[in-house]
Image 1: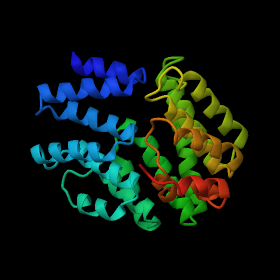
Image 2: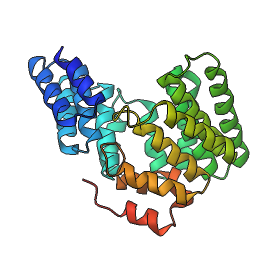
Image 3: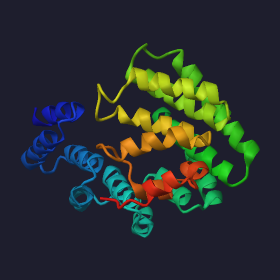
Amino acid sequence: MIRAIGLIQRRLGDWDEAIASLRRAVELDPRNVEVSDVLAITYIVVRRFPEALAIADRVHALEPTNRDALWTKADVFWSTGDLKAVEPLLANPGTDPRMRGMQALYERRYAAAIDILSKVLADAPEWEKPDILFNLALAQERAGEVAAARATYQQAAQHFQRQLDKVARDSFKEADLHANLGRAYAGLGEATSAVAEGQKAMALHPASKDPFEGPGQEETMARIYALLGDADHAIPILKRLLQIPFPITPALLRLDPIWDQIRDDPRFQELAAQKTP
């Protein structure tokens, strides 16, 4: 019950209350790693990284191969720009292979990222495929494999178009599919369609109605604009996201190749140079 209250408070954007409720839930059931994971994610969203790491370390002590705890630790280290600290995690048998792909991408080891993500994609469950496809396409594009990247973006677009035919209208799932379709169109350089899909996603799932997940549609919109090389539209979104509870940081702006096409803009460089909390 307390966990459920915390989740509702989080969805309403009552961050301090949500954290208090989730901390109480952890105190009442300290061996429940799922509740601890929810608290750790909440700490990451509000950029309280030392506390998120402490929770993940405690879960890791209980379950040394717990995948969620390993992800939390990696997310904390990436969010603070510490790629070296991620390396020991990659040897853990519980590590999600997608984490290895992300690390390679952030390290600009594109050939390695392509190899890892291509293998992961083949056996990935449906809900994991969007990010794998986009990270694979991005790695291919940055590696100069233009034709392969285009084929991957086309595969993604076709996949999301099919899914949109099946999903419930006006649902959060529909919003996510429009956002992902927009990213695919942006990768293909189809600017008008990309922006339209991203805007549909934001209208269906606005941050004003869901302060926890709604800003994710705004970040996707920024990613769409960045892929299109449109700094004028991407940068104001990023500036806002850095000012509200959301798991994006200046360090991630520096690491993620998705921003490379707007990276030379002085306004982007100013955001990326900010101190990560």
